[in-house]
Length: 353
Ligand code: CP
Image (tube, rainbow, N blue to C red; front, side, top):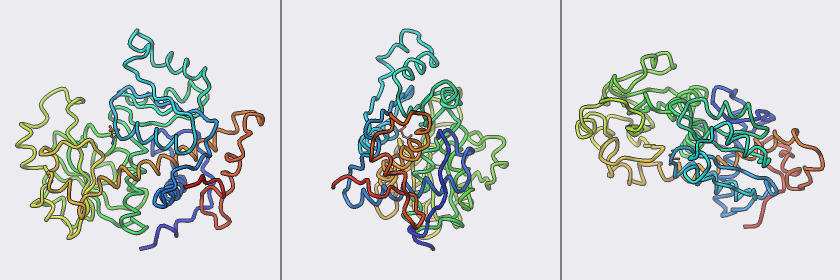
């Protein structure tokens, strides 16, 4: 397999928003992953400051609960030198009846540079992107997409498997029906040439799943055969309107990942989970806490680096919206120069360790 440093990109990422994986071509994805890989390299060197977003404002607007996504965007934006406002929706005027669009228009009037949005309704970030003048990042919308999770998962896999992940057999298991993580990951992993499988009970698989470019299985023994990676998903009870599984105990018996079921996969297979985990429901602690098997902590670490890369890429592309006088930040300009080798990364804008 190629090493990550072989992923050199001579391609200007030109998208204004990060809303859905389907907006991206392979080269967009390579450009974003190269940036994420670059910031991961900085993290590994304990360099936590690269202030190319100094003077920029990032607003986190989360209408649904989040630990990993919201906090990692906050850390990522701060490491890039941005001013970060994490809006507590519960304590905002949304509680007084203000609509999503009015809230967005109000925030937009304060001229943020990037709006990171999580919402329970599919398509809400895309709608906002048409109403505001800044970049919008979809941090998870209903059952639709979670593109930044898919990007960080792909970067975690590249780091783990030493570069090219084309040809890896990856099983995504559990509640696929309600999962935006699954929808984004299937698209992205297919673009990267992986052999993607979905495993779950018929009640938790979309009826059109066999049109997603994947193989569909209803039992773990057959589905996990030959898999290099097993990605577990939680039961999204908050999106279920009825009984989709008899009991959690029975669900764990058939679909919960423990050492016995993992033995059906390839020897040395790795396990991922986007979090939050429900131990004893879709995954055993024995698997989740085994550092030789579980990539769950790496996913969180990589999440910060990948989100730094995404913020960087989008801040570059939204620069053209503003007047020259607003773009006086030398770090910002420096960041637009890419290495002569073509690798997408800032040239000399790094902060001190
Ligand atoms: N993976 C993920 O989206 O986790 P949070 O809900 O904690 O952000």
